[in-house]
Length: 123
Image 1 (cartoon, rainbow, N blue to C red):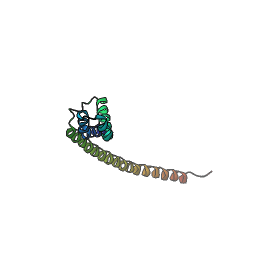
Image 2: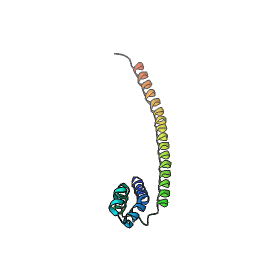
Image 3: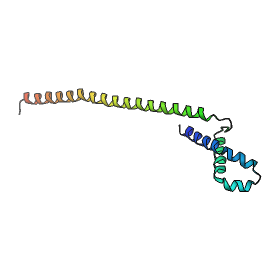
Image 4: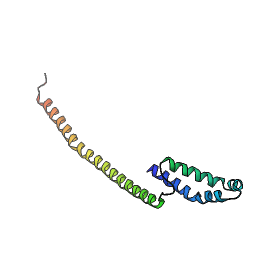
């Protein structure tokens, strides 16, 4: 999920700053344009590079589909977390139930031991 969240972040940066890159390439005075929009152009190039490192073509990336997949993963994570918490609660309950017979048996053994000691004659 973490990698998907990063991909979404970079895809958003790419998409948001792509217009600046297009305008930069078309501008007559590219140095001046670069100075005015340096931040956006750097974000665009960085996002493009990060997407390429993950072997994703930023031009063909479907951001909406990626967001939908990510929300499905979040929902599955939430459901699995609830199931895990429920299972842990059930395990704790079973452990408490298991302790009851053990306590009863240890108390019963103590009673038997004390009864034997009473019946044995002292020397």
